[in-house]
Image 1 (cartoon, one colour):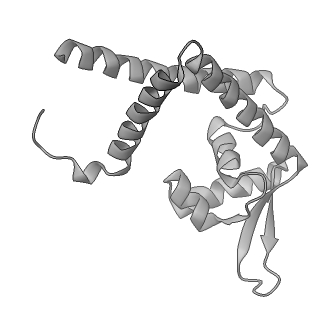
Image 2 (image 1 turned 90 degrees about the vertical axis):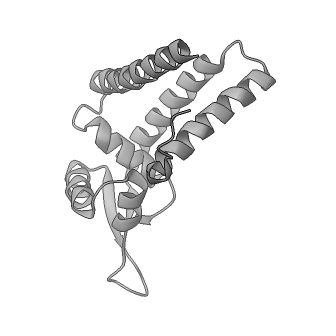
Length: 153
């Protein structure tokens, strides 16, 4: 069991790194060379039709409000994002995607759909359910690391 834990840990680390490298490589091959993969992930978090505030985006991306402000300023300057002032309260500013931002969103979404289809290729429904359960377990661990019991299992 202990050998399996190390092997699975190593695979998770390699897969995470590989996904980031492939995304970066594909981004540089595309017409969207002027943005970073972090900015693409911010565009992805904004979604096509939700007009989130910077605070909502910061919370979702788990980054500081200052980092979001800098990132949004860059994305606005590059033509991917627009700031939308509220009709009833002009102090509330929401973020929306421009046409170019929506193109990036769709390209990134398509990449991830293709990647997941390839990942699940050859598995039956029961096996996919097990994979999904394992990923949900991992996600729960990552969301609440402060609740980790010091006991080693």
